Image 1 (cartoon, one colour):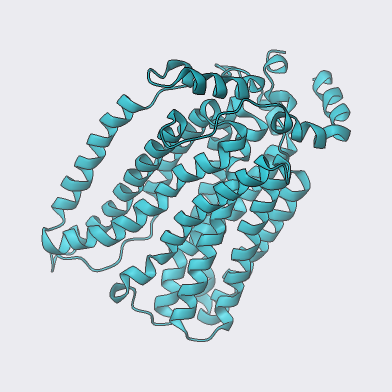
Image 2 (cartoon, rainbow, N blue to C red; image 1 turned 60 degrees about the vertical axis):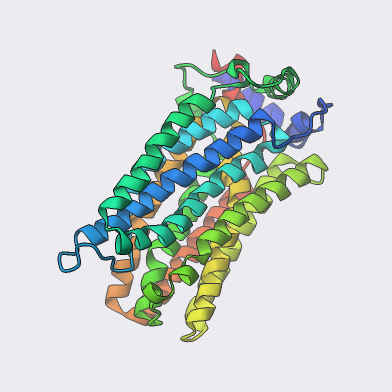
Length: 409
């Protein structure tokens, strides 16, 4: 343990240089292309998340139609807002995805590759919101299970055929690309196996910075997803059933925002405009502060449903910028443990997603107008606190406890 303390003290003054080291070093020249194996992995993961989230949303919509005894083959136009099945799904998908990216994504391409993959979540949600209701109305709710379930089974087979653990095991990757990826990721060490430096992790401020920021961001995110439709219906009397396309626009904005944020973050890193830590903090700041401002503006814009939709779309679009910030910072500080760390931070995010709608319900039940205003203030204050903590203690360098040589100690 003394060695870790000494290393941390010695590294405090040179963290800026360490932050730049893996990015500013001379790197092999191999530009990413649509036919590269790593871009193919991003596309496969995008489709996988698209299918997974489409299954999630279509299930919710089908349950509404299935339990509607008076209209057994109809659809009420709204899906239940419970997120608990979603949390179980996220608990296994994203840690596995991060474990893959730790072995596949070069440092200067992480943001765009991972965000292209993550955009499948919101695009899949948007697609299911549009299509599942139509299927319930025209073919009946059982066909939602048949169609979406069948697509999921087929894509599961494609997953096992197309995805490989690392470049060394991929049968179709070119030798040049394999050498390119392996050489850039050589400094992060091999997989951790069964050893986990749990004590060092618990004492790591950069890890706590990510965890707290994820909790605060997910609080606001799940509040937007689960509570804003209720606000628009109860306060603004906005009929979401008659404006399904309009109410789905935030999902399109979020998906496009993920892709654009990833491209911009990698551009800043490749041009050496900012270091890794600065880029992660910049995009986290944009993705946490601006949505809070938009949310605070909602109670003061009057009874304009269009303005609320605009603000909601902007909030869910801009919050996607955290995809190039805190959401992928795990791989920056501990690539060998990225999947495990994502599981930890995702657990805190799940807790926030459970508490936030409950807190909103309690506040609103006392007084409608004041309750909503207080709910917005609480979410904004949490986001501001999480951002300050992350900016203060976040890092972009591999931590001592995550290095292969020290992990054995």
